[in-house]
Length: 586
Image: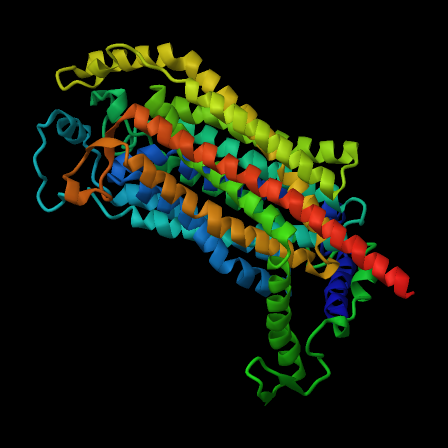
């Protein structure tokens, strides 16, 4: 490692020399500092998360365009995390030995390509026919040739695009945070990483806002004369594909400055980095010519192979086993996973919930959610850290804080059951005999009547989310303060892996399947359900099913927090007994 860092720092010398000879402008060199890296990488993370969240903001339009069910659209959203999980370790390992800023920039290019790939289905899909779905609702439809089940399979390209985005995004946070940790002053590292994460968490709001704008534009405005089209709100599909192009270009532009940063910066941490001795690792030593494998046989392999492969696998397995046998760590990770399951459900289907239960238009639902939820998530992350810092909470106090916050969140979630919007004669807007002009006016009246109740519901959910996100920073602090020092990086990485596998990947799929269960009218016959869109839901069943998932996620978070508190007490007692025994022996 020392040799590696020497090589990295030696690359700075030619650059400095080149600058003194005039080949690199002197003034722009001052931008190659850790502060500017934090700024540029934070902007890049913001645009990447905006592109990822944009899909959720236009998900209803995608469902209607390609006639896919909510469970299938949930799988589409989850494919981002599938690509991220499959490649995060490989990508991080491959890029850790090279120029991390350039690897991040290349990863951003992959993200942008994934975004552009998401827009391709629009170009190869036939022009949208709103009358077809309207006729299905009124019972006047006829089977269209060979495409009885669904309109097109071109939406499969969106699966590939989401996976590419997940693969490219796998380079950003691990490489960016490690680069900052290596070359920033030790006392300022948490501040820099906090700035990066804050900018990243501004991206979801940006994605939803762009989604609210693009859904006001007709999906085929580039193919047909929009002025000649008469369409009501329930059949409207916005230009969902347009945002992918816009945000994809922003991702490319925000990645360009990172190509300029060197593999290493001058840092006060250089001596600390070079002082790490690879021989201190547990397991095989690089000096060994042979290495004991797990099967019990000895193989003659090179020192480099032994140190980098066998030792890495063996030490990783031991570390993971040690972490999973720690009750406190396990409870914290499971509590975090339950909370992220709830967040995954909210961010994926909350706009659809507002459309169905409170009769809000697609663009208005995305706008309301984009202006509220991402903002309170950011505030929750910051306020949770401030509470822990100002109160000087130790591990026990942090777990008590998590238990109290999750209990109050449960109460707020319970209040959300009582907020709905039941309008008399609302079903008349969905009748087969309603002409389109009257239907549009009817939908607008419903939207206005339910706006105040919609805002009340969003306020309750936002307040609950604000409180719940106060737990996230204490979770990080508990993990870092209780695991062994050499296990910290693996503990954080394992936490991200568990959260994606148990929460972020399955939550959209499970919630989508539950929402499909509340459907009463499909766009195609029952044998096709799963490849068809739901045209009408049972509003009460939809509402209770969705809220039950939210309530269950928060309840499980409270249970695991409570178990974590008792695990911390047991761990503290055992630690004190061990210390007393050592003192007696001494």
